Image (cartoon, rainbow, N blue to C red; front, side, top):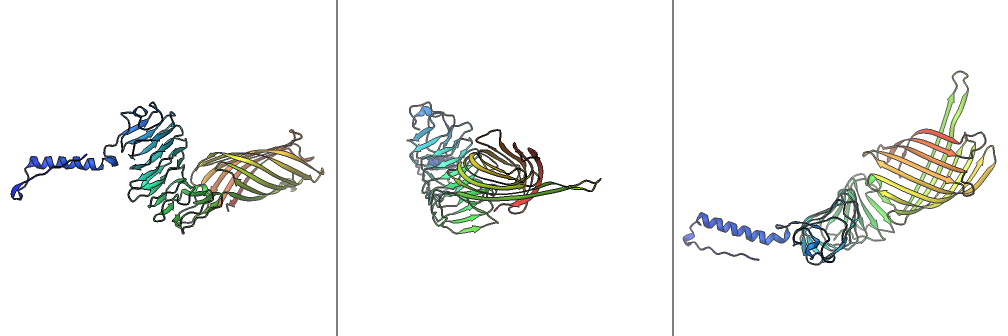
Length: 446
């Protein structure tokens, strides 16, 4: 559509007021027509899925009178979750509404003139290409986003990531601006996922960049500004042997983690002695130590396997030595910035030597869970339970449970208060089945 007008006024005399008004109106129409593709006439349209097939050109699939270039699109409900763009070349925003199913958007690439937002806890997947007309925000507000299509640009454009959930980039992207990860996670699975090296990438203090899939990235400059989400690393190797090829600048004290294989070493010693004021007689009430080594290997974002060995001694309980190596697998049911919950199942060999009753050994199953929740920026609630029944006699078991608070002090140094309950259903002669203790300690992550 075009509009044209010619005015002729002799001797360069000023236009009459009415003529000037007409000229201004025509100029406004011409300007709106010229920018209409970028959303001047954008209308909100919501996917309902009541039309023919799964194509966007079917009017009845949308609220209103179908979709036009520049419209703001909302995907809601659970009907025709996999659908195809066969008509549009430009769209405004993409929003996945609260209560939406797990959509997969495919079809022809489009120019993106606004932002992408996920307001539902379902994983939303975009397979069509998006050519950004300027820097666009991908807001993983309530759930994860997966971008399988190519992210390009029609003008200078970058990507801003907000929201506490993750954005996964799996393709070779061609935008040239800054990738600004302000919150949550950006997970990359292609060497050029962060766009061309003309731009750079910045990771905020409460965010993380994850590398996955055995890739070597392009030589793009990277600045990291903290220890990441729950001190998990601002730059994280999630699985596979990955290499970040660009220059890395530390904008603040920062942390880089490799999660594909995680080795955890822990240990502790507790001693308590009480004195009877009347008789002056001393009595040792707590005297135990333990050491544990654990190796976790990620099979996927949520599945993992592990191998561990624990060695302990408790002189009050007449336990001279207990060794329990084991292997198993686990699953992370809850995996968010502020909350984690995972369960494990495996098998252990348990060897126990008592100072008063010889020794024994047996094969035990192992069932366990771990839960932690961040209460604020410094303090987290931590809870663990572990149950090891003897395969040959389920009445013979060990049960370990604890709950407590962990407070980050400086850097990776933390203070911890815990209530610990341990039960041995077949203790050494003279020892109690149950042991309840309160512990206060300090430690650090490494």
